[in-house]
Structure formats: C-alpha cells, structure tokens
Amino acid sequence: MRASPAAMLSLSLTIPLPLTSTKTPFSDQSFLFKHYSWNNQSLSRLGHLVSEKPSRRWIFSCKCRNRGRNSYAKFDNEGEDFIVVNFYRFVSIEDPEAEIDKHFSFLKDLNIRGRIYLNEQGINAQYSGPSKDALAYVEWLKEDDRFSDLLVQMSPANNGHAFPKLKLQNKPSLYEGGISHLPLLDPPMRAKPLEPSEWKRKLEGLADDDEASPSSSRRTCILLDVRNGYEWDVGHFRGAPRPEVDCFRNTSFGLSDEKEAPSDPLINVDKEKTDILMYCTGGIRCDVYSAVLRQRGFKNLYTLKGGVSHYLKEEGTAEWVGNLFVFDSRLSLPPATYCNNAVDEAIKTPETPVDTSFARCYICDSQVQELRHRNCANLDCNRLFLCCAKCVDNLKGCCCSNCISAPRLRPVLQGVKRYEKWHVYRDSEVQNAPLV
Image (cartoon, rainbow, N blue to C red; front, side):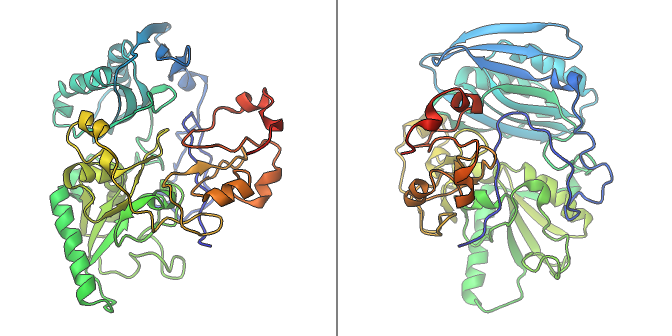
C-alpha cells in the first residue's frame, strides 16, 4: 500500500501551530508564523454567514474591529445559479485596513461566502454566491486600476454555497506558510507565466523527449506539481511526480541535499540550464514557491498562468488525467466543469468519462472508481483520503483500524455529503444507530 500523509480540510477558522520541522521553504525566516497569534480583536474581524433555514435564505452578520456595529441583510436567491469565484493579485496596498473597509461596505449587501484576504502584498479570494452577486464584486473590483486586468476563475456550484461563511480580513500572509517576507511584489522574482497553449506545447515536447530517450538520466526540463499529495491523487498532469507533502508550508523541492530528500526532483540539477515547469490549482502557490526557488539560485522557472483551472478552460484535458481537487465543499471537479467559456454552458454540459485508472484506495491500494475524498469518521483524525466501497464498509468510514474505536466517531458518510459540526452527532442518537 502506498503511504499517504494525513490530509486535513477545514472550512472554519483554524489557528496554525508552530512548526517543529525546520525543513520548510520558509524556515530560515525567524518570524515564521509569529503573526498567527489571534486575539479577541482580530477574531472579531471575521464575517459570518449563518443559515436561517435549509432553504436559500441567509443572514449576513459581520462584526468588525473599530466599526462598532453589526450589519444584517437578508437574501432570497431561490432559483438562481450559484458559482464559485477565485482570483488573486500581488500588488502594493498601502493601507489594508482602509481597503478592508471599502470591501466590507460593498459586500455587506451581497450574498457571498468564502475567504477574502488582503494585506500589503495584495488580495487572495475564493468565494461562492449567486452569479449576480458574485460577478458584481468582480466588476466593482475591476474598476480599481490595480485590479483592472484581474484573471478571474469561475465554476458552477450546483448545490448552492460552497463555503459555510464569509471571512473578510487583513491577513498577515495571503497564503499559508508565512510568505510576507518574500519579494512577491517584484515580478522578476517570480516565475515566468505561460499561457495554457504555451504550457501544452511544453508538455508535449517533454513527452516527446521522454519517448525518444527513455533511459536518459539527464533532463533539461522538470515538471513540478506544487500541490499536496492528496490533490495529485484525484488528478494531475501526465508525467508529474506525486508530491509527498500534505500542506504547502512543508514543500521543500530544491531546498534539501540528497541525503535528506533523495526523492526531490530538483536535487543536483543544473540551476542555470534546467527548465522547471510548475503548476498548481489557481497559480498562487507557484508564484510564491517560484520566489523561494529564485532566491535559491534557480534561473529558468515557468508557471502555468491561472493554474490548472484556467488550463482546463482553455485547452481541455490535453495532457491532464483525472479530476481537479478544490478547497471548498465540492472537493473534486471533473474537467468538464471548466472546459466551457461560459459557466452556464458548464452547468448544462453532461459529464464525460474521466480516467480513474491511476486512483488508488488509501487502505488497500485497489483502484477506486470515484475521484472524491472522504473524511475519516473519527472526528479527531478527520483524514482526507480516497477509499473503495469495500474498505468504507469494513472500517466503518474510518481510515484505519485504530480509528474504529475512537470516542468521537461519526456515522458512515454516504454519497457526496460532507460531515457537519460535531454537536449534530453528539446531541443525536446517530452514534447508536447501525453504521451501514
């Protein structure tokens, strides 16, 4: 059985703990994670969307530091198409607090849930909402010259909101790992972005080189997946090695010597002559990590502009296999979700068969048919993993035999549902019900 690291997916606020390992791309910065010391004031900056009923009616409640007020607005969006929107931009923002105020003033009347982070280095946003509201925010933002040419990714959310609440905040790091020290506002320090068509040609050339000289040990081009291992498990570009990490802050390609990381594809490569092709879901992780590699002396760095989601929209499934993992309640999306220029068409297009031959059960290593992770039924484990139907039944929805006897065990989760908060199971009879 292939070993797989534990993968945790949390859609609520979590407080990162200090890292014990020193082998991270950001470990030489003495202030790693020191900004993640939350207090009552910073916690009060969060916006919350609370479901009023199972129907499509919500209350938006936002408590904001220094604003001294609560703002409520009711929405009735029954029958509207919901979409998920993703974008980011590294750009200088002189006064993030004032920027937060502006965004709050606009968003308070919109039915939007998700994560919108701003700081001195720019903005990073992933949110869902009725298409009218979701696109209104994009159009409002593009009126600002700093964001006028923003590359925006959209995909359908067929079951309503893909996020439980809205978090609009001034976050010290736009992405995990304490990246505020990196020169991300300096474009030459980031990798050169390739349009999807250019990326496709690069991959085709890489495949031709491998076929022409399969035994060659000297490569001039390396394909690097800058995601987590569990993301690779449901879909990836052909030829990309599986990254053996379970969170971005632990990525260490090109940072260790051969004895410490013998499987590192960047060990002992010629930093002057080797082309490194980096990809991730939306592009931000590649921009961040390319700055790390640039500081380490790597010269020829290329990223996929807009990430895999943009590529699937422009080029379809060429050189891609499987689904695309996303960090919201949908978890896994088939390529057909993105393969149309219009979201409306993506919703209407029937799904085409997806190759699942590479996907393996975490427990027994057999092939799985469904490219969608489940969480371990043990609340205190909550591992995100692929599993065949037989192992789901045998281990009662858990990832291993040890978790079966855990004190906080949830019922077997069927279909594409996601687990709810623990009190739903703690306060009900569901723990005593047969686990079928």
